[in-house]
Image 1 (spheres, helix red, strand yellow):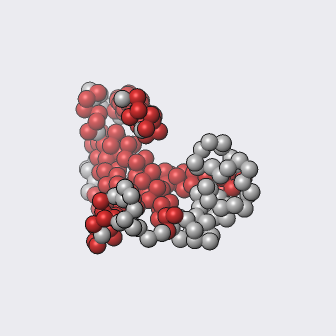
Image 2 (cartoon, one colour; image 1 turned 90 degrees about the vertical axis):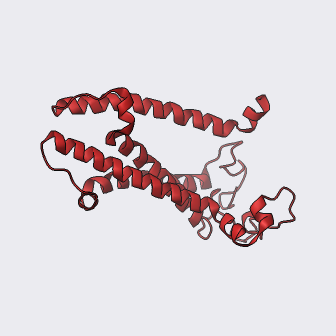
Image 3 (cartoon, rainbow, N blue to C red; image 1 turned 90 degrees about the horizontal axis):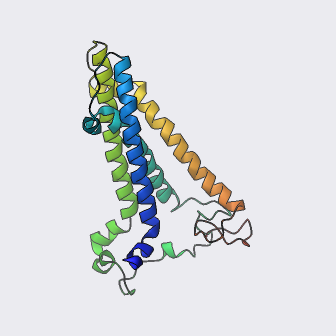
Amino acid sequence: MRKIIWNNSLALVFFFLFAASLVGQYITGHDQYNQELRERGGGEIPVAQYVTSGHFVQSTFENWESEFLQMALFVWFTIFLYQKGSSESKKFDGTDAVDRKPSPRKKGAPGPVKKGGVVLALYQHSLTLVLMAMFIVSAWLHFRGSLADENTLLALKGEPAKTGWDYLGESRFWFESFQNWQSEFLSIVAIVVLSIYLRQKGSPQSKPVDAPYRETGE
């Protein structure tokens, strides 16, 4: 058990942080939502019902949406875009192992590599494809949650509900998306540029401490 935990410690720690943050969001979000409902003359909802509310769905998936979009684009753009001196960029001389042709004879090669054909063609791009799929699903859930929350607020004011097409042409959904997207893209710029000049000993996201600024790649 100790070996399993050690071998997966990075993923486990971040999953714990994710779960703890999600619980914190749920508790505080439920309280905030009930406060908003009271201020608008509505009735409070029980804590178990909050999970299906537009307020919770919108606030959760608008963040997931931006994360998966950021990761998908970063993975894709690093195939053919470069940043001189950054640990997050491939080398300019084409010697990176990620560019080599996959060999089914390599010891421990994944099943899709040994199978070849269409399976291998998809597997070669599976990381980007799955991240983009997760972005699309998250964006859809964000939209549905945001629309539901908007219609809840309209109902409290005695106004008619909006259709999906009507809401898609308004600013709220797009504002929620863009405010998250810009922060994610800024974080990419930060790690790409700062890794040129700054170091963290022991981290694979950093170049060696004694590496020249112009040296590209980890």
